[in-house]
Length: 135
Image 1: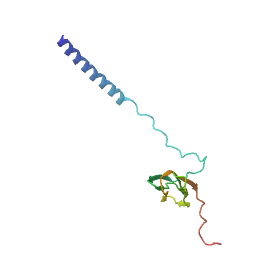
Image 2: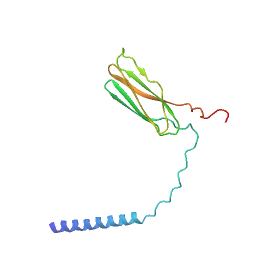
Image 3: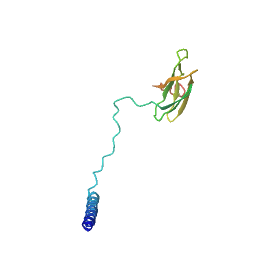
Image 4: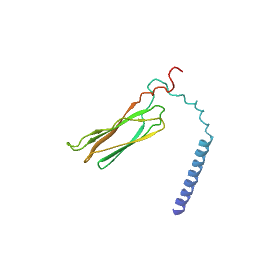
């Protein structure tokens, strides 16, 4: 009986090996997928993106927002902090312009705990063209 069991195990091993080889050969012989056409630029239906990517960190009663602008338009950001205690004043930072490929760090604090903090974005007005008038 033991010899029959060993023989079956040997046949099962050989069958699994052959099946694996056949599957690998089939996968290897499969035709390559057709080459995808180059991706077209997205349709210019909506407004251009301008929002800087921001990461807000809260440590105790202090808040810091680190923002980086990867877009070609200037983003005007503001940090808003809501304090947990009713007597603690909530704060809104002054607007800060983050130019393309630039970064900014905004900070604020509460006297005690911070309930929430977030950053708002708005597109900055395009700067006036530089140059002398009348040229």
